[in-house]
Amino acid sequence: MTAQLEKTYQQLCDASREATMIGRIQHLLEWDEHTKMPQAGAAYRADQMAFLAGLVHQKQTAPEIGEWLDELVDSEFTADPKSDIGANVYHLKRDYEKQTKLPQDLVEQLTRACAVGQQVWIEARKADDFEQFRPKLEEIVRLKREQAAALGYEATPYDPLLDEYEPGETTVNVARVLSELRDALVPLVQAIADSSQRPDVSILARKYSIDVQEAFGEQVAEQIGFDFGAGRLDVTAHPFCTGLGPGDVRITTRYDEHAFSDAFFSILHEVGHGLYDQGLPREHYGLPIGEDVSLGIHESQSRLWENQVGRSHAFWEHFYGAAQQAFPDALGDVAVSTFYGAINDVRPSLIRVEADEVTYNLHILIRFELEQALIEDRLQVADLPGAWNEKYERFLGITPPNDAEGVLQDVHWSAGLFGYFPTYALGNLYAAQFFDQAKEDLPILEADIRRGDFSALLSWLRANIHQHGRRYTPAELVERVTSSPLQHDALMSHLNEKYGEIYGL
Ligand code: ZN
Image (cartoon, rainbow, N blue to C red; front, side, top):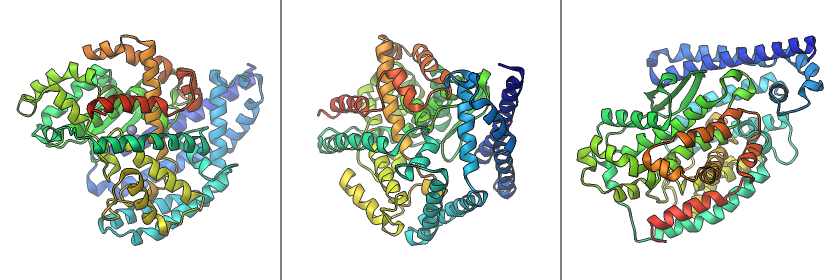
């Protein structure tokens, strides 16, 4: 590398690290807002957040970044797009172009519309009144279409929105895989609903003291590999995971004395996210190859630990004794097979966030199909509640009794998050594909889990997924790790096998 190019590259990296640093300060403020901040601090906190958002935008769109990128892009140092330099420059250029394509007034209109949108949505949901939310949602959909137009697309305006969360993925590919998944899932859900075998879920609603839930959850998280020397677990209304810096990953959960599995599986889920963040290459922190690939891949890590590992029989063969000791009154008289059935209860329900491993994907499919139709102008916002209810009836066999439990249940659309929903289902698909490959590469994996030894699996995830950061696109990563593109077969065989056994299908 010539001295001049070397200097330019260093300047570009410094700018990227600075933008990341401000972003992580935002994360810290957000974490504090959700865990510790007194209510009266909200207004000034909003000002602080807006100030930092402006600062990040300024840093990311500075004209000199464009000049540095131009200098580097066609040089021999970036010829290999998978080398450290090549991958960093590729992503920084892609991000820079996206940022600078959006007119400032559109960015501001969207920020305002979504801030107000979320307030209006909260009120509309409380009042069970979609009409109250409709005009705001119409405005947000219109602005998202403008955003898509500004970013540019070939096939559908949904593409650039999806690309925000799942870089390089296309609507047509996701639609194909998810419709194949839907066609295979609907009959399975029906067969489970028709089965005469029903797990006894009442045991999970017995009394589980919160202190003990917390201690038990932390013990399991640590045994799985979450580094509490480089992370924390706190309490919030809505569980999340956030990275504040190398060596500082925060996860949260919420506890209910009469719902053991809610907090426990949300801890496993967030630990999965946290392990990914803890496994990203530290030496590249603040640069693209030190960051996570996509929301879908991030979700695959949380789902793999939550479902493939945490809801498996092998896992509870190891931990059930400890669970019985921790909760003698609730679980002392319960056999492990009864407990295993209860944590794998499947039933069509109205609310996405409470859905089980099988029906969850149908909730996502419904939202994906509807939001794609809204963005492509094939569906009007006014017709959304009817279309929502029709799909719930068709795919899950139930109709919401009101809009609060139907179309108004999720925050996403009010916050302008179009293209986000499918990443939840992609996470489930990737998780199944990755876990199949891990089983093939690690023949003793199930025996390891039965012994409570998760080190080989974690090392496998670190080596195959975490350490690459953003070097590969999600599609490339899946292909590299599993020798197969994104597909629905791995998830369906996992579900068919597991639930066929539990429900005697
Ligand atoms: Zn998640």
